[in-house]
Length: 220
Image: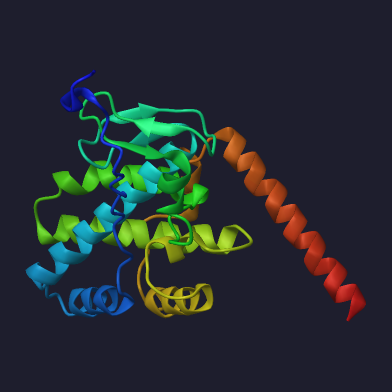
């Protein structure tokens, strides 16, 4: 009989996904920044909460493409995206049905394809930021890109994946936040982060949205 030490751990440990950030914390940062002040504790809390959330979103997207992260040792597990498949980590022995793993992120606002490039850039850049000014820069960078993504694409805005609240609440919050706030860069630089295929899809969605709006106007 095979020793239990070599058998996979069949008691699944569900992944723990980072939570969304409370809007009042972000608002406080912007209020302080406008006064030339920085609460280092709050700044670090928000910066790394967004960092953790971005990492969770990227991990979920990878898992949906067949590259799940082991919640025990963070090894990448290649797998077919099938309900019946059991994810098994060869490094630490952790195991769980794919369906249970998938259930751990369902309904938690962790899927936002339009924000993938931005989340990856933020997750790469934020750890290198040393000063309060640099950290605030990258927070602002991510918030504005989430805002632009929400205004460019029809449907659920990706910002709801980063900030707590319903879609309408988050949209209203970002509108208030951006009012009177200088944007660090222009929407045109979205093109350096989105692939040609994604830009093509974006244009298709825009045309569809314009068509729906025109049909609605004719009926009214």
